[in-house]
Length: 108
Image (cartoon, rainbow, N blue to C red):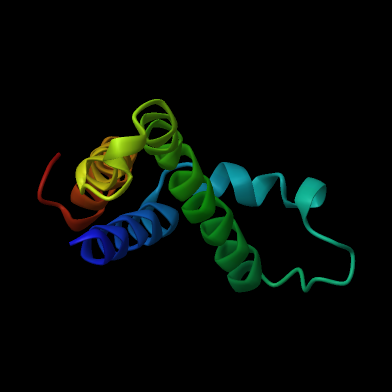
């Protein structure tokens, strides 16, 4: 159960990295985070911007789970912290879902 929830969190984070409206903002500031040897091709910039956002989603959503495991040591083997992790990742992914619905034409 714990590994399945972790795989869910990874998938949600990857989805957010690809469809987040912030991907353009991160790409616009690539001069800050990109090393000079990295290609300036837009597809490479988009890939690394998506990777940064996916990693940020994964880490930011895991904060509450880590705090719960530290405060309640008995919960380390229970699926509760991973459920919290997945729920917060879903909340952080809400703008990406809205953007995908607008792009696909389902919502206007």
